[in-house]
Image (cartoon, rainbow, N blue to C red):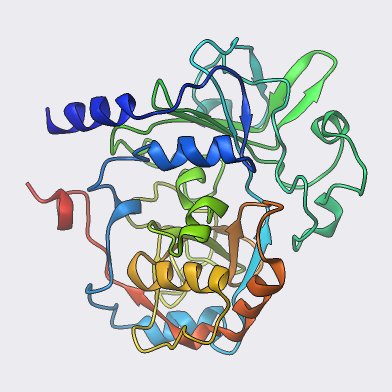
Length: 329
């Protein structure tokens, strides 16, 4: 009942959504600021600044690279759709048995991962200067995530390797999340992220960076992961069983004594969030790479100072489970 009343109250303050709205606009800022993205007791919204660390925290950090710098991809964008957005079929070609059924509200201006900026470790997946969005929807390589937010219905649709074809949209995987509930993917099911986690709640967005602090858990990748997962993850993507490798869903926190005062404001906003909410290890990829929305309003030179943060500045937290912490019954 409390969650229903909270959702109803937030809906009353939600700006009208009458057309598809791209992520890098003041209109999108106002909408996401008014949203409750998962319940307040959801792991993404849990303050972990006081939680204990794992006994092998230092060993896990060393396995990723204690001297390696924190980096970021300008990768995960999204589009907000109105409640009457026309739904279309999306053909799932790789993980149909671990995907949610359509049709889905995919708009004509659906953005593909990395658009419109040009910073990603997978340089072949980057859009070419001057390339139209329609061309990007049809051509290119890489993970090609597509993220669709339906705030009125409280739904999140995420796709891996999405592509528009002459026959319509297709993707390698499709996941739908209820933003009003703490429901996870089924056990051993992937999502558009290898950990089975949603991506949208983990994106470091311009609107919150501009306000001075990212107030939710973020996401990052590492190259070598363990064949295991920890709540709220539901899936692994590794054959390695070394206990000092991070599990999918492992939560890392910036050390309390790390001084952020010398960083530019946009970098500080991310680092403050990493102290309070941390970041989930969500997928296999280059080490210590976070996801930041490819928003043209960001201070990109300021964000480059994040490389002054090294792996040794983090610690691995013993996270709370489905019936612990703020979810304790």
